Amino acid sequence: MEAVFRTCPVTGLKVERNAETLVMFNAVTSIVFLLVGGLLALLLLLTRWQAVHLLPADFFYRLLTLHGIAMLVAWIVFFEMAVLYFASAILLNTRLSVPYLAWGQYGLMVIGAAITAVTILLGKADVMFTSYVPLQAHHMYYFGIILFAVGAILGVCVFFATLGAARAEKTYVGSVPLVTFGAIAAAIIALLTLAHGAIVFIPTWLWALGIIPMMDPEVYRVLFWGFGHSTQQINVAAMISCWYLLGTLTVGSVPVSEKFSRSAFTLYVLFICIASEHHLLVDPGISTAHKEWNTGYFMHLAVLASMMHAFSVPAAVEVAQRKKGYTKGLFEWLKRAPWGDPGFSSMVFSVVGFGFLGGITGVIYGTEQLNIIVHNTLRVPGHFHATVVIGTTMAFMGITYYVLPLIFRREVMFPGIAKLQPYVFGIGMFVFSTAMMFVGGFGIPRRIWDITGAEAPFPVAYGPTADLALAVMAVGGLLAIVGGGMYILVAVATVAIGKKINR
Image (cartoon, rainbow, N blue to C red):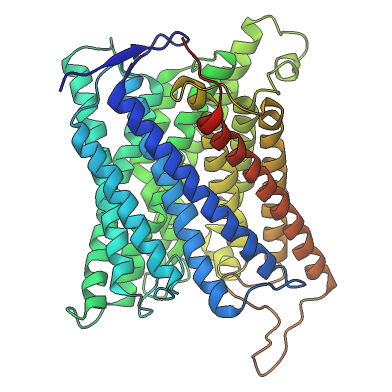
């Protein structure tokens, strides 16, 4: 089939129809799962807020399982598929290779996610996100995850095939753009991650079917985190690619040193998967020496990569602003930045939230001595809500405000709400994550329906300060849910009834 292109009048990029359509389908589907995960977050939040304690125990664990799948896997991986097609076919002005495989990616991921979600809602997989054996879910739960992972593998294969076609047809000169280079790093990490997923979930599925008599819990935990946490490392590479793209789209920045930034992405490929082992620091089955080398030494080379990007992205923005004449004093460039552009404000929240609140606490909690204390407390979910929700989600939200006019060719609806949305969501999440880490300092456990010990032999009381911190956490979470609702309102309204851009 002959490829059909249009030329974007704003960017000058050639946009191929198949790539454009697949970006649309994956982006819209990701937002559907964000809506589902957000509604579940509201119910879970009103349960963890002990003064409200909304859900009964069985529904809490069921919805917590689905919340993890919807937010940590479906919302983010569907959006990453859109990023991969954008960074390959559209940024390189080429056709999407093997489009039927790309549609296979989309179909398998939708079917897999639907099977997994329905199995959870039917009460046959109350195993939470980690699904640690010997907890056993219904075999359809694992089957759905396997289908989803196979679909994602097809998407990554299409991405690399498209890069090959662009190079063979010479649709670009020199090296690939930095955003595409970052997407390559994300795709390589995705292959490693999905391989771990296949290794751990296929035998677990066979175990659930009764074909394999048992699963080794220790082996499962090690392999699971090669999938479970590394999924978030794909996010890191994709998120930072979005930072560079948003810098270009919002203030016209270019990387200060491409070699510097590309070296940082390479460090991710080599070392970031090791970071998954910080989930195993309290695991008795792994030697202390192994833990110390992995999380005490090698993992910090991935942390170094994040620090390099944390300098590179703001530096590029500062240089671009100073070239526009904003050179008065130390911070005129920052003061005159486009703070009313939701793409820019989302990027800033994402950089600060990931780099400081999420990144620094991740390094601290990733030390073995402290991990023993904090591992099963609310400090840990406070940390990963800062990295994944403030970091990754806000970067993807920021990109959305440019994808809507460039790909969907619609004027963004409710521009006033769009300008305000990153501040409502970002401030809410900062309050929520910080309060969650603070309350975890009192020893309040994670993954638990009730903290009072209502069904235990002895009641447990954490004191009024912890109760106040839980209330602050709930207020921050509610504010973030309002901000998330504003984002979904703008995105859905724009796609459904936004004014068509006829250019």
